[in-house]
Image (cartoon, rainbow, N blue to C red):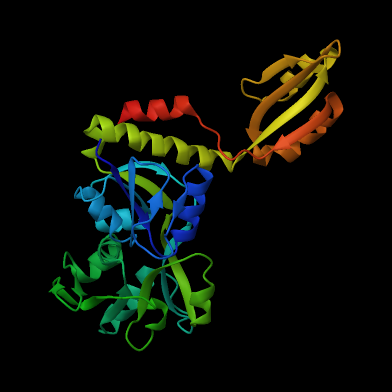
Length: 327
C-alpha cells in the first residue's frame, strides 16, 4: 500500500496542529528537529511545509492531504477538496492604513482620495491575488480606473496595467511598511494589537480564515488512499466535535425519567440503563458544552448524581459516511 503524504503547516498553525493530531490519537515525534517527523500510523508519511505552499502542492499531487489556512486556499486558487473546517487558527484578513488619516475609513474613500489628488496608491501584502480581486470588486476602483489591473510588483516580475495603483509583495513584517514604502497594507491579524502598536487602523475586514483539512482530488479516487484519508478525517472531526461536547451521566428515578427526557431536548439518543436499586435508571448522553449551564438547573431538580466528562473525541461516523458519499 502506498502511504498517504500528509502536509502539516509550519509557523503560526504549527502548535495547534500538533495538539489536534495528538487529541485525535496520532503520536508524532521529531518535529522539533526535522521536517519529516515520524507518526504512529505506518500508512501516513508526514511532511512539514509552509502553509502558503500546501494548497499548491496538494493540488499538483505532490502531497495527498494537508492542513492549511482557508486564506491560502483562496489566495492560491488551488483546485483541492476541502474536507473539514478544523476551527482553530482563526484570523482576519484586513485592510489597514495609518491612524492619522482620520478622514479615510473605507477602501472606497482611500481610492477616491488618492485618485482625486493624482497620487500613486501603494499597497503592501503577501496576498497578491486576493488584493487584486478585492480592489477590482469595488465600484469606486472601476469608476476611477476602469478595467485596468493594478500593477503587481515582485522582485522577479511585474504585471498589470495601472501604475496609479501598485501592489508590492511583502515578505513579512508588513505592518512596518506604512507610511514610507506603502500607503496601506492587507494582512492577517488575530486581535489587531500589532497593527495598533504600529500606528495603523483597520478600515475593512476582507475575509476570515481558520485551519482546514484539504485533499488532492485524484488521491480521493485511489481506493486505498481514500480509506486512509477518511480515517484521518474521522479522527480529526472527532477531536473538533469533542471540544464542543460534554458527556454526562445522571441517575434518575423512574417517576422523573420521562420528565427528564422531555425537558432536555438537547439529549440525542441517550442510553438508558436500569440501576441495581429498584426503579432507578442511569442516563448517559452527549450534549453541547455551551448548553450545560442552562441545562444544569433541570438536571439538579430531576436527577440524583451527575458525572461530567469532557470527551477527547466524539466520532460521528454516520456524518463522515455521508460526507464521503458526497465526494
